[in-house]
Image (cartoon, rainbow, N blue to C red; front, side, top):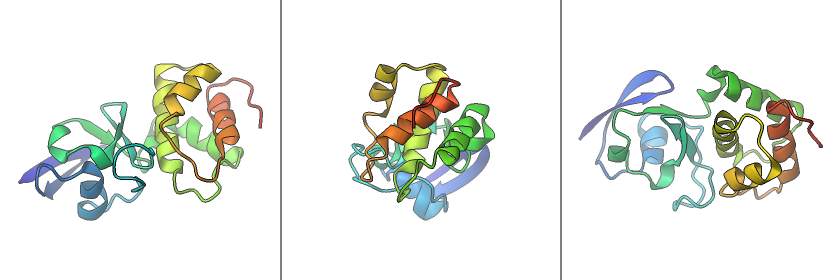
Length: 155
């Protein structure tokens, strides 16, 4: 079945079965490699993308569920002012260690700051709780979110 997807502001076409996970459509069919495969059940957050502004686990979402929604991946999040601030804070505070989970971390952090521009530590814990970092850079992740929000960052 043919699907027309709006990915990072561009219309892209994919001829796949409707139950194909969005992650595989993005990576294997469209060549959008930023979202990563981590667990396949939406529990680790490495595959997080925005669908109409909301964070979504693309590994467990069938492409047919997306419809005409706007999909933003790590490749496109910097085009938005909030996403750009998050990426800059990540770089400035040297958040990434191995980097594998970081696209999903940045996507979740950007969605959080769009919903709550000055999040509390509890807000950060709640929003980021579904994103696993095997390198345990959680302290730097929190500091980068605080920095991107304009709050004091403790590194």
